[in-house]
Image 1 (cartoon, rainbow, N blue to C red):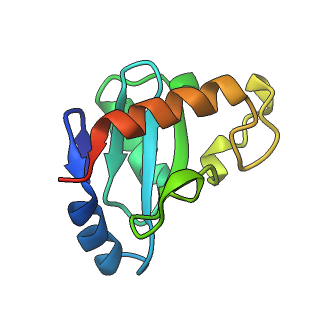
Image 2: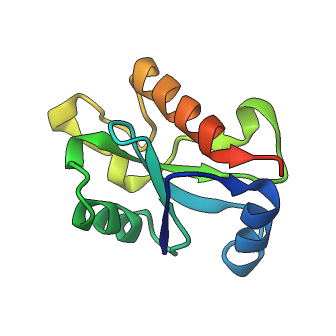
Length: 114
């Protein structure tokens, strides 16, 4: 597991995906710190890793990255850690479009073609 705070390439994500689930990489994004944790079997492990490194629970959201896809299909907002009735998020998705936008901005900043 590692925290990405600078950049990771699509090629690196593809390599990680072949070791994990074949076509996706699980990630947890901290929308306040602008970082993401990757390279674990479970979003909850990445969440705990970020929390241990200074993230706050209300700022971390689980996503899946599909390195072989582009556009809106690249990021999937789906994780059990996103179920947060206390934050008015009642699904595995990220219901707040402003938070989705923040996640996309962070991922686009951190994930580079080369």
